[in-house]
Image (cartoon, rainbow, N blue to C red):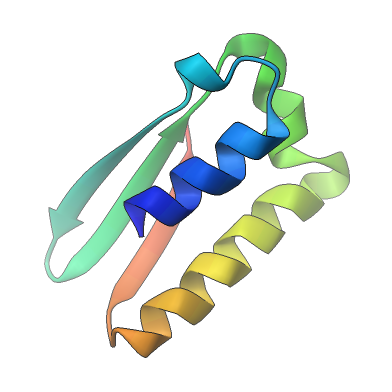
Length: 75
């Protein structure tokens, strides 16, 4: 999952070298914390959060295949 979020985020931003994803596993729920350069925050979130929602939807679909609960947080 981490690689999927990294790939998507790096394709969206102007500073791909500053994209990082941290995995936090708590009570069987995997949380992916996405961090990007300050200038790229709007590109990752999108208008009215549409890009962020799309990223979460793709990750949710991929996590269902692996039978895991995964949340994506943009920090």
